Length: 265
Image 1 (cartoon, rainbow, N blue to C red):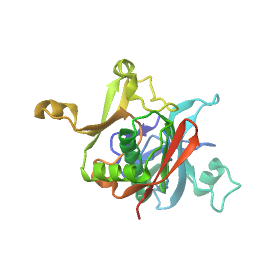
Image 2 (image 1 turned 135 degrees about the vertical axis):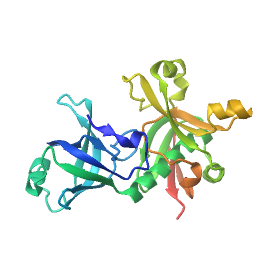
Image 3 (image 1 turned 120 degrees about the horizontal axis):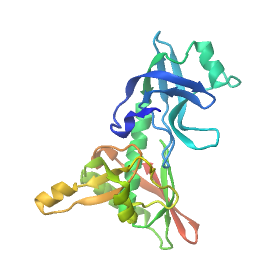
Image 4 (image 1 turned 60 degrees about the horizontal axis):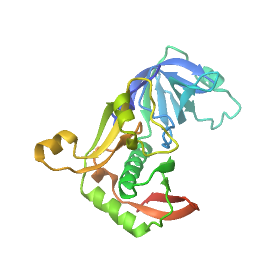
């Protein structure tokens, strides 16, 4: 099992870790700051620094799978194959002298991760601006997209203005959790038709944008923008998103509209 430190603190950039396995799927650590591909968000890239100072470039991060193709609790760090395309992960690591039990420093490409965080939080703002079910999602360092199950047309400039207003309002973004039973009692919290939140542990991680319920009860006002199950990484405040705009809107089918996001610069 890999302890996923990014779940509680998306701003952790590095951590010490111990190699627990080296397989065809990648390098498995006992703990990591690397987010694995999932929920539409791309896996992290970065480096593993060995005790002697040598560095292994990590090109991607994925969830481990068992022999039947089911996801496990392991997170696999995939070494970059530049210059070594014919070597397996095991042979590549053996040439470097990396072995199970070794201690490394796992360090993400922070610039890349922060772009992913900004885009991911923006997709949640889009769910507020376009209150329709999502039937497709992709979040990369260069763009993000959401596919909405709807037939009505969307206005690119109006959505960009709506995003800008929510960013400027500096809404807090908080990580929380609800029980499986609470989610069962309120299934409308799940806004994706294609990706369901992971279950089995008894609780489901959530992302809330806007005033927390306790604050709303105390002040007598509500400022909730979005609240939904999500395992991805996010910024702590919408003001951190910066200038993100809708670059295009596509009609994917008679019942689907795609909204593509990009950085204004």
